[in-house]
Image 1: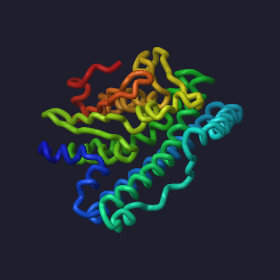
Image 2: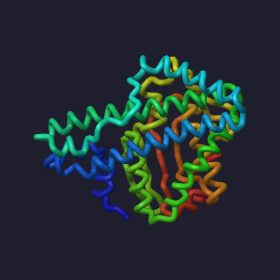
Image 3: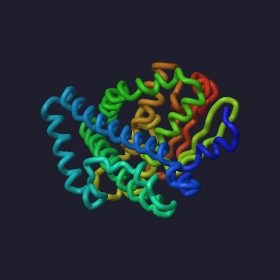
Length: 291
């Protein structure tokens, strides 16, 4: 479906393509698209936080919401020592980069804006991770799964709609999504699937590598023998959504994991591999065995 050169180009990061650009202006459309993905990730995280709070109120009433409100206060008291708290997106960078006098200045603008975007997105990822840690600590893995399922109902609608698109389009959409949370990746293919190696993954692994589990934020690592851990493998709290959304709930809808995520265990910040089968149902019969 893609030539080797097309896959190499798809694997190149936006920054690497900017370095190779003949002029900064040639990157305007691509950087505008990247910013849309960043904004989409921010919005999804805001929705996820809102869903966690709403689910606490629905399932546990005012006492449950009070617990998560208190956890929010504790989190934001500690967080400024970890990362700046930026409540709003940074100014658009596409036009500013395109107007730069040369590539060196364009890269400086790009690096500054991307660092600001990381702060905007990471605080939400870490906040929802702190809230889910409280859910797990107070109510256990069954309730953690229930919270994931509540959010997963909304999140999977887009993924299930994407399944109907051609395989090439599904790959491009997924790569754009992963770029939106700063993933470094390499794409390859065989007759059955695309393989995307994230090193690092822009969410789970980067959260580990950036020291969030050693920063006094109280983020949990879950090791219960339960679906939220693929059956008992130590799993960071953020990552526990993967076996629920992409294994359990995907199987309930299409009979196969979607996509197949081969995540590291525990606090391993190593590579994470995604298998995107060209025929989604092939993941059930040709993919690796998952719990």
